Image 1 (tube, rainbow, N blue to C red):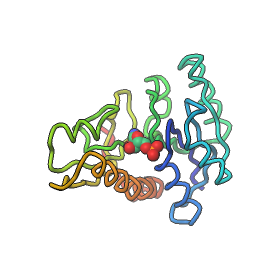
Image 2: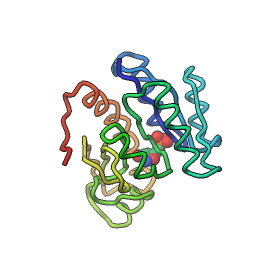
Image 3: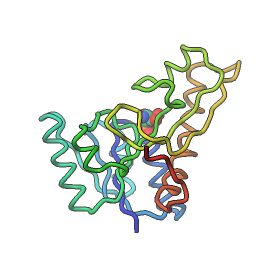
Amino acid sequence: MTVLAILISGTGSNMEEVLHRIHNGDLDATIAFVGSDTAEASGLNRAHLRGVPTEILPYKNGRHEAEDKLEDLWQRHRLDWLVLAGFMKILSPTFVSQHRGRIINIHPALLPSFPGAHGIDDAWNAGVTVTGVTVHMVDELVDHGPIVAQLPVRVRPQDDRISLERRIHRAEHRLYWRALRGLFTGELPFRKD
Ligand code: GRF
């Protein structure tokens, strides 16, 4: 059985969809824990309500200590995959290289366009007519590793920033668990170069 952990920093709607898909059997995996860099993340409560153990990574003491704890958790739970879902900290190159090809992220734009923390705003402000969501492997650069899956979202003439964001989140919820399932089963190959 595939063992995964999910890292969040905020609401955790992507996390919740993945937990739901595990629970109803769509995604054949076991969740070891949901982790966050901050106890303020409201998604922690959502995880707790679903009976999933939660962990706070001590970023307040620096990235080194936080990643030491994450590494301990990884070994203790024998993780196969680490799933980032709105996790706002950047993992160090050392940590990423130790787990290359085992850390996945979702980004609310069609990479390589609009990387960074404001993908939805940046696409909106650029006036694109198509944006979307990307699931990708994490490498040493931000929002950069090999692309696993993408889903386009058309910007409609009647859209405002809020309606676009809502549809992008819906697209994320549709795509992430399916991309994870494809990765876990090996049905969804991705370029490793
Ligand atoms: C998502 O849009 C994700 O792509 C981005 O941060 C947001 C997290 O939302 N990295 P949520 O916490 O999953 O609701």
